Amino acid sequence: MGRLQKILIPFLGLVLAFWFYSMLKGKRVIVTGASTGIGEEMAYHLARMGSHILITARTETKLQKVNGKLSTHTCVFMADMAFAEHVVKEAQTSLGGLDMLILNHVGTSYFGYFDGDVGHIRKLLEINFLSYVAMTVSALPMLKESEGSIVVVSSMAGKVGFPFTVPYSATKFALDGFFSSLRQEFHIQNINVSITLCILGFIDTDRALHAAADVLLVPPAPRTECALEILKGGALRRRELYYRYGSTRLPLLLRDCAAELLDRLVRSRYRLDRIGTGQRRHPSAGN
Image 1 (spheres, rainbow, N blue to C red):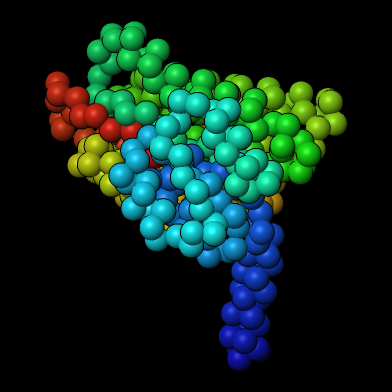
Image 2: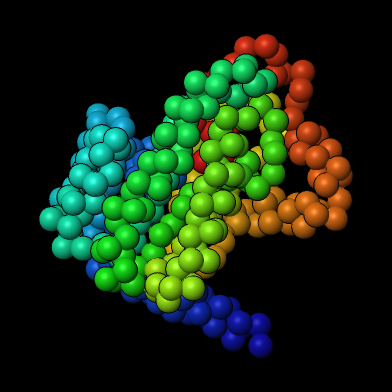
């Protein structure tokens, strides 16, 4: 029996991997925020799977570096995220349509006590929320035609109020409200476009590590594995994806029945003596 298990388990893993890769082979995908971190890793995974991808970011030099590692026939790049309609039009021209829209880009915020800067929140909402809405609106005609998928990369900070990320958390809560409501309307109107909301914890992106590695008591999860899980969630048209499950989904079970306990658990994750009065700019401690 033990020998049989040693044979069957790897074989089953190969079958599942082949099945998953075949689901995304030939798919036309936009990945935003693809110059670094999770977005960059998703671009590499998709290229290996044989997807046709269009990657975007706000930093052209970094994006060109990623583009150079990808096959030219699977990738075009747009450096300016301010023009959602233009990006989607490029997908129509270069890819001939769209099967999956992965919204992953994020604006720079700070890690520290809220400083009362309303203007910063307004600017962050433009990048982290309103641009997601604009991109979705522009891409929706093509996604309806292909019966495709929208993948929204969010965070635990969009489900639970985390300290030291007030502006960032506000934008992620907005994403949850908008896309969860939109999913309901799609169902009512019989629109066969799936929406997958990805709830991420602390991921080992360079910027997140720089911002919070010496403050958070929890170890970061690997971005390569995280990127693959996001793609799986989108391909399987899951409603929500939690990564890693134990550190994201399980704590949320306390939210309604023991909210104060959850708040204490959240606060216990931080080395409060290392917060200080300074603020470090970063995109997020997860995404």
